Picture 1 (cartoon, rainbow over the protein chains, first blue to last red):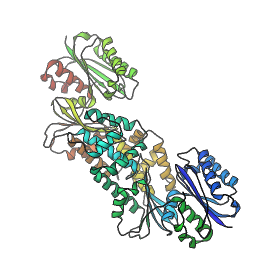
Picture 2: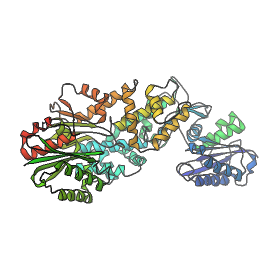
Picture 3: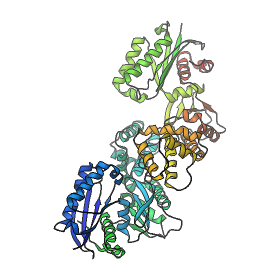
Picture 4: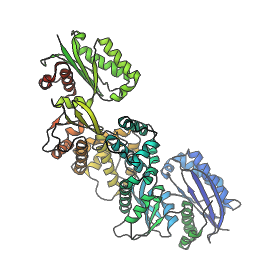
Length: 309
Length: 309
């Protein structure tokens, strides 16, 4: 029996599907995080192995026609020691021709059968990718928190804190966003000058990406619309920077920030384009594996696949 | 014989002057850095002691009518252990009534005898301060590199790296600024995609404030005018945020960024205002001490003081 394997290896969980040529799910597996940047590489490789082994069940590994793994932090695989850990996993599993692709590639494939288009990712960070033949051929943004990540949860959180510091420097009423930032940071607003200094100290005492924790406050506050608007404008610019003028391919939105009010604003700015939301990375991995094994006809199959519990 | 002592305690050096009521310099002293944030507090206190002791020479410490020390990182003095180190220094020196003030306050006093106005500081970081009665009564900016520092050397350096990443992402010619950033970061531009990744890795592998090292490249590059313009606009906004509408008091510019082409652009935007450059912090400290001891008439004296070698 021929089949393909698709895997979505994320920062906190890894999910695998074994799927027949007609789209029937033959097995599912899941385990812990497998981003080799945010997990120890041994652990990441082990989680991928566990999820795949579970999905394979009694299936003959040698019969797998293709296996595609979508992974964040693929740059880490340029380290030969890390690459060797994953090679050892394929060997133990008895799988050949395993292909690791970037998470924007599986995200794009999860949302559309089209081979060309754009992915806009806005989670803790932000990046847009130009997709051609289902491969990421170039990117816009993706500079990371220190150098960019405009419109991301990090950026939204930083803007929220900046708003609070601006208001604490002034004499006007403290707005809803400022009050919720101060509450979340456990800073007492009674003395504004002290609160200003304390908030700076708290934020600088944590890892910079922890600023992303304030992002949900921006979505919730009544007086945060200008920040949400600015985030949406920056993200739309990022998406357009990864597209040709007049390009009519699908544009796929991925990530926590794009699921909320920023996403709604981004969609307004992309009005008239074929905008989609990424559903589930593992479906994209299955689609990529199926097309590799069974040809273009498979492209439209996994849209009907059930979600893996 | 009555006299006052002024001290400028900077990050890399400390300088002290003992000055008579008529402005005659009675003694000078210098030693290493004394910012208790960037130097171990014991060392910082020791450097202040050395510089003052040298300036006093054979003068009777008990005859000092006032002693003012301008210091960066004064927030550190709220730590009782650090404060105790400095108190012990005054005791050993036999000085009473020593007053520590912020560096914007001495910078302002160094440039003008006026009691009210604005200081705009742009070095590694940026901040504007409202000065009333020669004291800093409020600030704009000063959020630090993670949350702000717009227009500072950190900000200029970050913009330079962002420009390089933007150009490396594209297919056009690499401009002068990008080429000088890549050279400074020791990144080979032959493979753009590799260079893009390498530059991000290099910058993220260093302390964030090290981005300030790229700032001089922005001043030097022919194609960096838009970045210089933006820095100047942000710094001018910062200055205006610390001023009342129509305020006609002096505006004092301080810091490495304001000494270069950004400073020239800021001056254009402040056209019509009484804009001055801070000369030498130790003169500001002497002026503040002299006014405290001998009254307002002293305000115009230290302008004629020689620079301390």
